[in-house]
Length: 512
Ligand code: BG6
Image (cartoon, rainbow, N blue to C red; front, side, top):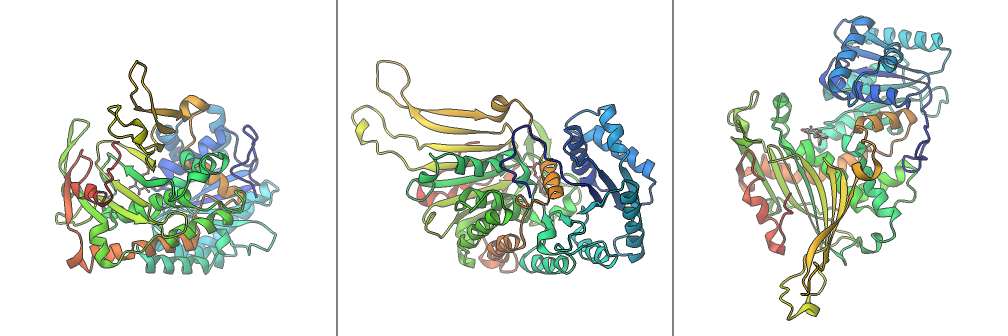
């Protein structure tokens, strides 16, 4: 198994011979993310030297039609323009097989196709199945794969077979447990790769490198020195064409349960035994999730804020309110903004408030993590007209303009002793001069190598849902004690109730 954190800079470690079967091959995610990611991996020459893709969906298409669709997706969504030579090599290994996920016979045909492609290439291909379909199809597809003899035991030693699953993984704790049980009926946990695309982002992976490869941070990384932590996932987009999904989900399930809690757990883990074994890291992440204090139903009212956007302006353009979006119920109570005050109840973090927020239709797209350190005593500056020193802050900008800044206090030039905050700045673009790959590129590559480090384990999913259960209950069926659903103007930074959450400790949201 490869270590994702130790590859030599220019060393290419190619995965073994693989057949990737994409279920939901005609869907939106395949077009926008998966196909462009594969094309860019081909461009970088990272794909296995023997690699085939089988697109699988209910629509009847020929290989040729599928290739044409794939070309259109690459042209529209790839971060690089199409290169004729790369395309020719890439397209020659693309196939299409009509498959209805609930029809056993279709899986027998799929098996024949896979066998034939392996024989033509004289290769024992690993099989990697990508479920880019709605969750209700996970169970039938997994069971039919197993039934058709397309799932090997992990210990069989014949070929590796693995399953990649897209979010949403469940709607609440109970449905996630059910889904886990269904999928594990056909695949062993070590064969299951649950995607959270935030884990594929360079800056998110860098959290571990930053913490554990720099001796300077770890001694300070605890409640003795850290005052509070803030994590913000802000988007300026609305719900677009995904209203039917989002209106039944809300931003708590869409962003907090997965992306936000994943970043939080990486930021707060204990040093894992090793960075080269997936379970060392995931064991520590799940401990963090387990240690986050659960809210009582009453605490939900004082520790969370939720809101929905009304009409407003984004980049000077008028945009409708959430309830006016196509596909949204006109009386929808779904939240498009959430803020929460969390606390990790363990030795390292006790007493440190962790403020998180996520929202749609905010003024701009930015995902940022800020660690505020405790203030230095300012008594030494007494009599120098210096009121208050700013806190040191470590700011990890996850996107866009990926980078890390450290805010310190410094003396501006001049005869007077004054103090001003300044930033020590690192920007990926400037320092490394290579564009970051898309998250899906890294994740697909790792799954082909059998490295599950950047994927979510069953217990992590369940802990994350468990944490949010009282929130969902208080906001839902036990609505009488719930905090109200506020409204905020599209293009604003959200409701003032979010700022109230920080007041008891005298904190403020960082200005983004
Ligand atoms: C997805 C959510 O998982 O992440 C979307 O379903 C959200 O609602 C998206 O827009 C954000 O991803 P990124 O990579 O653009 O920050």
